[in-house]
Length: 193
Image (cartoon, rainbow, N blue to C red; front, side, top):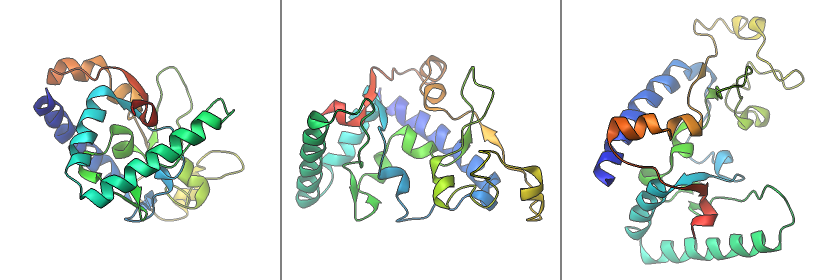
């Protein structure tokens, strides 16, 4: 089943690379940025978690120990939290880099693009736009919109577009059927430990 999931990841990576390339004038992600890994819930399905653990077991002992320590600290913080939505730094983030990058989850692979959500009219802007990163060169933080005149003023041929890359879509039954595997249960990453 993992082999089928890897085929899906190859397919997904190909699609996402094209989307990111098409939106290159608006994308400011770079190695070490890690804003998307510093505060989130990080939804993971069972198969994503199993794949992530493959990457974890291949890490040096010292790195695994650091990650396990991070997990313990996050779990303690969650236990003591009264927040309805518990946000935390990804335990696999070490020195502002993903220690299991090749094994990262789907949410990690697709984050940074404007995306659509079924049943909602307004596309979702990645939160990093508010932090001076993706789409910040065209995003108006006061209105929460991307005014046409803002991207046209940059003389960019390609307009900012929203893609159907929501987590729920990318982990839908359609992809399970197409690639012959099951995502399984889905929950925040920290809840898998």
